[in-house]
Amino acid sequence: MMLGVLGGMGPLASADFMRQLTLLTQAERDQDHVPALLWSDPRVPDRTAARLGKGEDPLPMLLQGIRGIEAAGCNAVAIPCNTAHGWFDAMQAATKLPILHIVDAAREELDRLGVEDGPIGLMGTAGTLAMGLYQGRIGRECLVPEPALMESHVSPGIALVKANRVHDAYAPLAEAARILRNRGARAVVLGCTEIPLGIAAGEAMEFPVVDTVAALARAAIRHMGFTAA
Amino acid sequence: MMLGVLGGMGPLASADFMRQLTLLTQAERDQDHVPALLWSDPRVPDRTAARLGKGEDPLPMLLQGIRGIEAAGCNAVAIPCNTAHGWFDAMQAATKLPILHIVDAAREELDRLGVEDGPIGLMGTAGTLAMGLYQGRIGRECLVPEPALMESHVSPGIALVKANRVHDAYAPLAEAARILRNRGARAVVLGCTEIPLGIAAGEAMEFPVVDTVAALARAAIRHMGFTAA
Image (cartoon, rainbow over all chains, first blue to last red; front, side, top):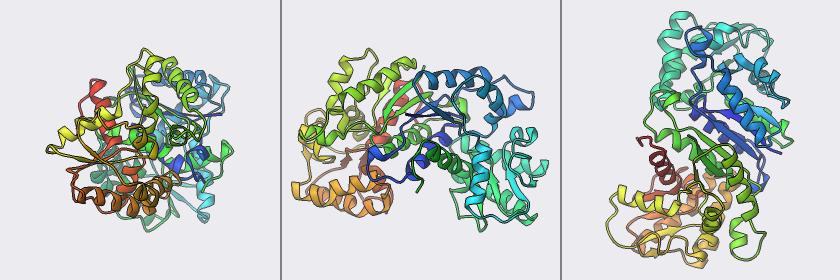
């Protein structure tokens, strides 16, 4: 009984997923924690570039990771990368293992946080927003950053995290979240697994945010039959 | 080309190893990072109990992890658990993959930090200290905590990290490190991968400490042909 984690997208988000999977499990000793295999191959071609029709298809490498996870004897898959969920159906069609969907985990987290009805803010990569990954499935109206704000704040903030510069990433990402809040968002979903790492590097937001890394970790803990703390 | 990480001992230390592996690599984008497979099975029987002759042998489960890492096509192994290195020779004999030794990584870190000649302090599990894992191989005189200090501070501090209580772990672990410093240690080696997690949860030590998680990450980055930041 082992959770397969298809990661490396980016690698810091994968490490944070493993950390949250541990910290969010009720445990007193090593043996109380969720057995997990992290397949962290950062060489997967850029998901956003592919989604926008400007880059190599990541699907073959995603499926290679799924094959490795299957071969190791895992019995479920979690993918701590929102944009990679653009290939969710193709991955799910290629394996009998259940793949947890990060948008479902985010929806459950909105419920857990008791976020009242109304629009939510949605931050993510240009790829995630363009394909409408959240819109519809999350069951809420989604307020997304204007293209100018994506270019000036969100996309550079994500890139800074991928370059290990989490402290520099805080200001642009936090400002973008506040702009969505001021437009009427009840909560802001951090729909790219790099964004919570930047947002965590400074002062806490003064409104509810959904960390999709933590949300997916909680979903995985429940799915594996453990108790979330 | 992929690094195999035999982890889960404990799982928080494994997650921290993956984080340090990422943060300590010179990188601008996902694709610049070290591909890695983390086999995190926290069900490995307690290494210290086994070492002290009071618990189940962990070797069969350690070898199961090594087999999984081999099957995935990895070409080197890092084990972010000091006490598990008590079975290093048996693991190395069972695989053709090179296994990086955490004590060698700690020795390199002492050199990198420019720690002057003289005795070093050594903290670790009772198992690590009893088997003399560091003594000899590290090439320095090792000052270890007295048994009473192990029982009152070091062992409880390690257990608190394994129970996800890193903030509570700080005081006992930091005090034990200061006692070794006051006995004349030039630096203190945190020779259990849980200890740096506790020490990082409070004020920084006012003398050099060797984080064996970070030291092993640096050794792995170099071994894999990447550049450490």
